[in-house]
Image (cartoon, rainbow, N blue to C red; front, side):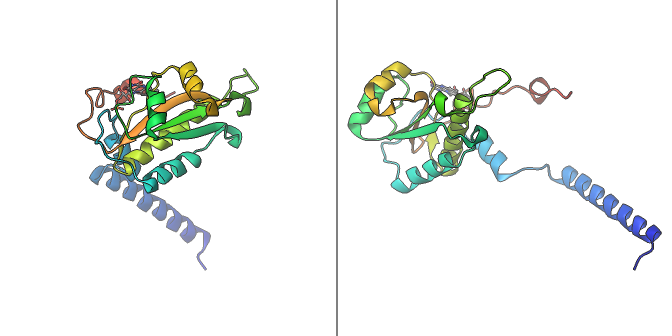
Length: 200
Ligand SMILES: Cc1cc2nc3c(=O)[nH]c(=O)nc-3n(C[C@H](O)[C@H](O)[C@H](O)COP(=O)(O)O)c2cc1C
């Protein structure tokens, strides 16, 4: 049984060891993670091989979308998988940005199912949809596939072409496929940390 003094010395030594360890580790190898590596490798893919995406990959992308968090767990988001030629042709009437991808995921949200912030009435549906969309993008990248977030489409036309989406607002389209080509010129252009972050 240690006396109080010895206990205290031992605690201090442990804390110092921990501090020294963190310090050395940070100096020797900057912290990295599988996620950060993936986040940096992901890019907007706008050119796809004429090759189908497997059912297994589609299921895995949908599973990543399904487990995304939503405000108050209200889950006001739905995903449609568009891959039949006639459905892709309908979707093509709503945007010029499908890039001939073999499959497109459509993410939509329902404001009447979403959490609402009591202070100002802000509806969380679109934010939830954006998180689901981000899960889709990152899972696509992790599978070695490519996709691009498409926000430039006519939502009224999407609803007109797909009555099955009634009650939802389409938020984003994700053409997905086997990537061909390179990241675009904007991929590496991000604000510097000093510009992007302010410590208060
Ligand atoms: C909300 C949102 C909407 C976007 N809409 C489109 C679009 O309609 N068409 C397109 O080609 N790219 C679209 N993009 C892709 C961006 O242009 C791209 O993410 C950005 O230029 C950075 O490039 P990177 O994704 O390769 O890093 C969109 C991205 C986001 C996040």
